[in-house]
Length: 170
Image (tube, helix red, strand yellow):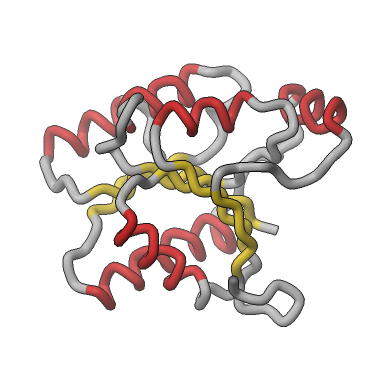
């Protein structure tokens, strides 16, 4: 199962991302957090399954996307999790800043519906199928998974999506 932590506060964008993920070719478990504070709490919870990918909007309430990115990439246990910024900002300065903070990718949210859906699918299929990712078995995640004795999570919005019969879109 490809675990995605999506940090997005815009309900319309969230709806479109969910729609796009229904058409991806791999089973996806989506954990949705709507502000930066929730994102950091999610990553620190002992029972949380390590995300394979973080998709991060920058314009977030409470803790900004820039601050979440900075914290993730400066944390020894979290820094190897790929973070793709998915933002409406097309500012060259903002894009450069995200990479300076350690973003593994920056995708500008397309304005057109089909382009938005396609960009979302491409992000997930690239990171979930093509990219070679580090093991999620760091001491942090082993310790946390071992202590909780459970799989999954209680995130504010956690769903399994995908186009395979054993993992129906939801």
